[in-house]
Length: 196
Image (cartoon, rainbow, N blue to C red):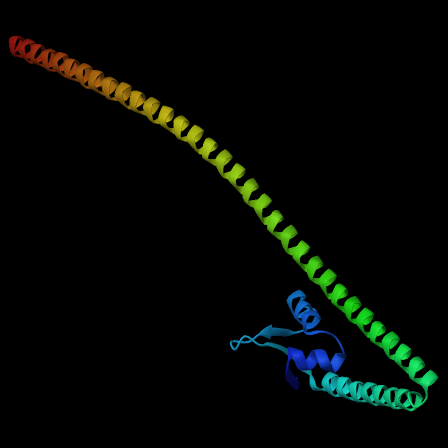
């Protein structure tokens, strides 16, 4: 895209609004631009738009010059001078009114953007609160699970101890049975010897 970088003040003159209005529109994201490192505000617009605005500005300047020329002609007589002065005052008042309207419009746009930002910040804060609550719930559940695990570990140790005791008892019984078998074998051997 072929773009033109203008000082915000030049752009303001080009479209017939105040510098403040342009700055507010940049802040609101309505007009693409930024504050440069030199502290000056700049606007970046497509070349076609720049050419269109330049042409409109030239037409407006010609119209204003034509009106001024006609007013100057009117000023030649006393009555014409009064009418010309009155018309100039009306035109100036209209320009000021239009300028104020543009500035007010840009301020409303900026306000809407700021309200949206506040809404997003509030939403993010609410989500953080919800996450905190969720984290606390998870921590509580984790503590409960840790208690359950601890109980299960204790029961497991008890079962292991019981199994170890049963194993010892089984070993003892096996030893006794082996002694009995051994004793019986000796008796059997003795009996056989006696028989022979």
